[in-house]
Figure 1 (cartoon, rainbow, N blue to C red):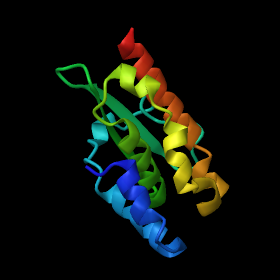
Figure 2: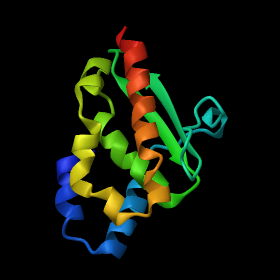
Figure 3: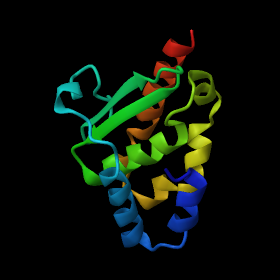
Figure 4: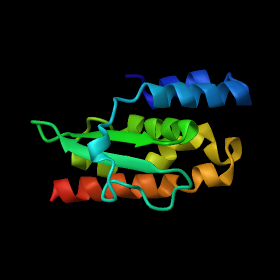
Length: 135
């Protein structure tokens, strides 16, 4: 899996259309999320598109997230967010400045506000999950 730094290196050389394509490709590369997990409980509130995030815990305690969206760009955004936290321990996730790691992508200026409005909610849900497991 690429790191955010690797992805950003590629991203900064792309024009707006290719950045959209890159996000869509990231979303397509997400591990499939079974429909049975797409419930009201896993739905992220405040997103213009439907976004589901389901945490699983690996044997060593690290968190692995399944995620999906009914919108290709939004699915790419959640894939980008997950790149910052996937398969890390709850303590590592809580110590990660997710917003800071996403800042170089300048998503607010690249995408319409209704596409980015749910990002803080995605991040809050991931942090809340990490807090629950860190206790």
